[in-house]
Length: 426
Image (cartoon, rainbow, N blue to C red; front, side, top):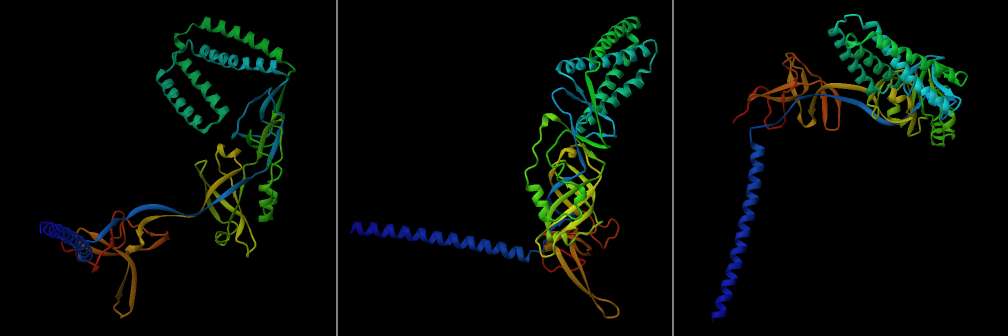
């Protein structure tokens, strides 16, 4: 009897737990349904601000620089560069000095600090007995520091050296009125004698390498200088381009090559692109190229679009003139090719509505636009689409027309009973 009573009690507890679980599940379901109905019938619409953005109509590609390049022989361990990669030089300008042996090179390295110090002393002698305007010199020093910082970022070697010397000269001029002119002259004469002795020791032991043309100098030689030539681009097929870029470049002895000159100031960029993009381009069309690794955007012109219309890809050749020193030594570079840029207000596609209205002649019109929430009033605003992305439109921005969308308008992306100039019930 007692055992039977225990069994009934256990069964009752199980039933109670089951009933509790059922009640909890039903409560959760009712809560979910209630929230859903509340969202459907709620008068408060979901909104998002109209934000001003700039969007590119663009595509990416792997670009190859093609330039008129002349390799300069004469490199080695006893060569001292006068200019560095990325610097613009004129024809016959000195690029480097070749010394007959290591001893001559070491002697030459002693000349530079001597020349630098003698120039500083000459400046000091000119200003030693002159009451300079220190305030003006201080301004020049500040400006020189700013220029030096900018040139350090740009990485131009010879210009950087010149600016450093200029800053040191200004600093010396700042303190020149406190120096002894006789002591300065004695030091200068001693250094000049040392320089004369070194120059005599170097006589006949040096040769100068000069630029064979005007253009940009690069210390990097990659082996494509003789295979990728601008003259062949207009008629180059995609198959030929693939062949040239897939081929191992010619092996060169770096020790015997100083570098190369990029002749002229025009460059070309060749890249394989989808046929769907090639159909949008024509010779002479103006585009922009964003060099992502160099953080630089340059205007370009379509030079050639070479493709067979049954192919999936085409060879695009772009022509440009603007670039920075970092790009001179580049051969291959991922790029963004920008066909057009659009600046306007971003509107989600889910916010678009079409409103119909009839004019005084009874003619039906349809306007595409969005509803906005101004305070508690819903207003319809016509939009002018500029560009379409995957999930939104870029639309024209108005600063004055109250019937068009303006920045920070609260665009309704979801709502019910959307009518123009109606109040949202709260």
